[in-house]
Amino acid sequence: QVQLVESGGGLVQPGGSLRLSCAASGFTLGSYAIGWFRQALGKEREGVSCLRGADGSTFYADSVKGRFTISRDNAKNTVYLQMNSLKPEDTAVYYCARTYDWQIVSGRRWNDRVYDYWGQGTQVTVSS
Image (cartoon, rainbow, N blue to C red):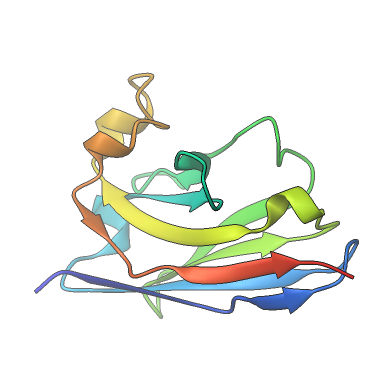
């Protein structure tokens, strides 16, 4: 049974940091790509970052480039999203999701319809 479970969200001040975790079960990370998405209140869900399963290639949305880092621990079957220099506009529910590697390099990496399994989400609030 495929499952993705996010954790690590919370309340942080502007300029602060958080690390989100996405624990995967029922499949091996090296065989699939994992993406992080977020959805702010009243807005559409948007892609933030993704990591290709086969070689660990990483991709970032322009809005987070240089501030967020995606990584994985194969032994723990877990993907992380390190978020630094957080801004109020980063406030959202963050989700991790699974797709196939070929979708990541096909130009559809930010299309949430190509992701087949999703976690329940974790709230990130950036506020003073």
